[in-house]
Image 1 (cartoon, rainbow, N blue to C red):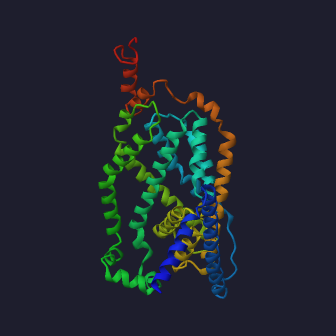
Image 2 (cartoon, rainbow, N blue to C red):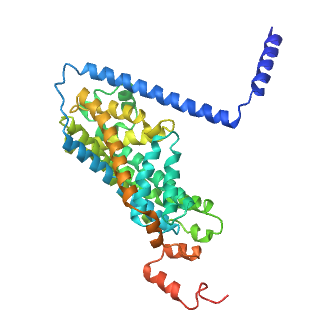
Image 3 (spheres, rainbow, N blue to C red):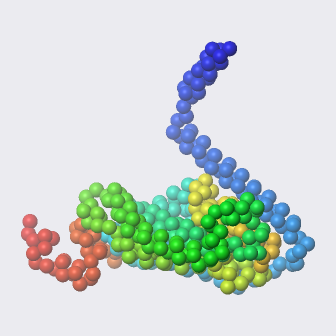
Length: 394
């Protein structure tokens, strides 16, 4: 009997191995799988929202929208990306590309719209091509996009850890599932809940100690990704850890601005959400954004972010069931509309070809890269020095 089963297994195994999908078929299968997974998440979150809406029908009165708060929510969201634009521009300058701030902002906001396509690769493509049109190099833009994204999301994870105790006050902790309560009680994490200032301090110390390591890792990536003909020795110098530290600080401000946007959306639906609980709103918004970013199968984190935000908002005592649903949907709509408006205005108002003429791209890129990290006085002295290699006759 075992011999027969082994023969059958070997026969099916050989037939299975003989069936090989072409690269195109594998690509199509993967896209179909991603879309099906995204649809499943949307259905699941929609069913949750519908149940929560019906449960709050009796307890909630008529809800009126306050459009002034919605406009403020969009303003907070738009301004919240300024730190990312500043940091991205500084990284490109570190790699030798001097692109005007207007062109960088145009590329950044327009690239946002690419995240609503599966895989999120179009974000990088759009930003890279727009920076190239403004006088930069696409490869430099692509590499620095990854730098900015990874550091921002890393900062988001740090913010999540630092503000986690804000989500578990006494009245909210009682609503957390029993398994989570038992986990907090059986581990040392309960001390983080009882001492809310301990988590931010530990997170700050960990980030401070990790700065040199982050700088070294980014430098290695820069050398590997350097285009042909570029002086790699210049790139081997570590990316300034002070710049990375400044970026992390600016990203903390960015995450809080997104928290303010969520708070304004809650106020827009008549919720009694207090500004004093900004740590709570920032934590919820950050968890939703980071979770949506990690869900590569979902365009723009659609469904995943809403599911996380909705389930965290409904735990808060000042947020009713219907307010939680409306705020979750509205903050997505407000952010999407804001992205379209800002990207459209910048796309029409900023002319990259004109800005490209003012972008500094010297012929000797190795000297340009070296000067990118020098103070203006040193850079000018080096350029005008009679004995410098660049000015000596060949």
